[in-house]
Image 1 (cartoon, helix red, strand yellow):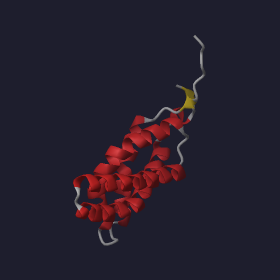
Image 2 (cartoon, one colour; image 1 turned 135 degrees about the vertical axis):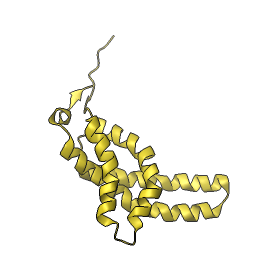
Image 3 (cartoon, one colour; image 1 turned 30 degrees about the vertical axis):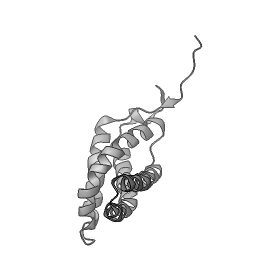
Length: 139
């Protein structure tokens, strides 16, 4: 067999990841809840989507790339943007236009809160991550 070298990857600090995953959206909501309570509703409606879609995306991204707040914010924006075609397909399958109208309205807020939550996650993760996890290793 031919031995192939693997691209170095990063270990993920599980404690820092979990704390940042939960605290990121909560910090953004706590800082900005006074804006017509929109962040509170965003937390309620977008929180489950953030956990279901964001957790694997963040794990994959952090495993392969050095963590940076800017890259994570861009990832959050792309993840929110990717939900629009899914909404369009779901609307066509179900056949309810009101689903598209309501979903489009909520996803528009996702384009704002997705990057903010991912950026807050990144800032918290980088602050809490131990040095051992910051070095690329052959995995």
